[in-house]
Image 1 (spheres, rainbow, N blue to C red):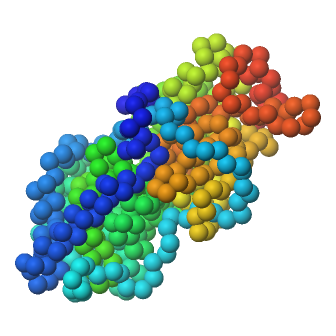
Image 2 (image 1 turned 45 degrees about the horizontal axis):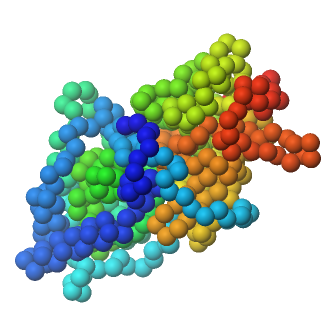
Image 3 (image 1 turned 90 degrees about the vertical axis):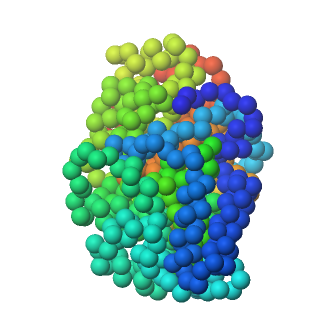
Length: 459
């Protein structure tokens, strides 16, 4: 897992969180075939689910061999996503002021679409899971919570359940004490969304809101990330879809091969990925920002951290890095890192939450623009999001690209950027001049950061 230059074909798999049409069509066709075959052989929805999981199990030869000690396979977060940002380019378009917000997909109302051949399902999503021989452990887990049973049997919404198979539970380490019932309920809710996401919508979506909302620091529903990885379509980068489009009377069930664990905090993710973020972590530690990121002492509701990788720091050159990480350069380093942090505004690829925890949605225009206030005094990041069918490009300050999207965390989201972000300098005319990657001296860096070294806003 290293940020390297890779041949141009690889971004077609994962560079921009794409949803490959061919992959989706094959997967959805496979899911429909599973349902078709099951309905030809059986008379009820229980057997539809069993047959779907059975065939998925027979075909699943590339199963992950481990689960992260905290339940979240953080290392796969960057797997297959290291790309030279010059590989794929989109046409430039002028900034358009954006008064609306991104949207995770059109809302679905009414009853869910039924399986083929007009044979309507006769089981709720709860009954499908409870009666299947492939989800016995999940059913036992759900049955410990009467309110969740009632929820998944109800008709208040069309639910989507990402159901771990029994084999997914075998990945849980035997050692360690069992989590509390409250924590287990939160994990369970993280597998459910109260909206209808058939396979087609899942693979055209970037993030999905769930029924789990952390008690503090995020301020909105914890989201799942949908990713087309080199190992196939996955949720949160590590839990692969193994069966899709198993419809019930009140929603749809998709099978996944790993339990979905609510993610850790931003600081923990950075700490768990030294191969990508050791330089950033060193800088955060030297400036005292890591301790603040990892603390619950300062209240906030979400946030966006545009995280430069080790390779991004290398682009600055050895002299600037030597200066920034020296004792004299420490105050400049702190200002620089604070320019990457946005507090109380959480920008996902397809959703935006402000400090009120509102997901302000629109009809997803092809181009939209945000000015996000950073922790650095009175300095904003100009963020442009452009969509080209299933592709998406996010640029910061017209130059740096987001290379790995939507690293969901319990206190915000990580967007990995291709370059270290530098605040603009003011020209004699009053115009702001943004850095666009040209070679820079230590003196030029100091000139950009000098106004802020003694004025930093405390987190």
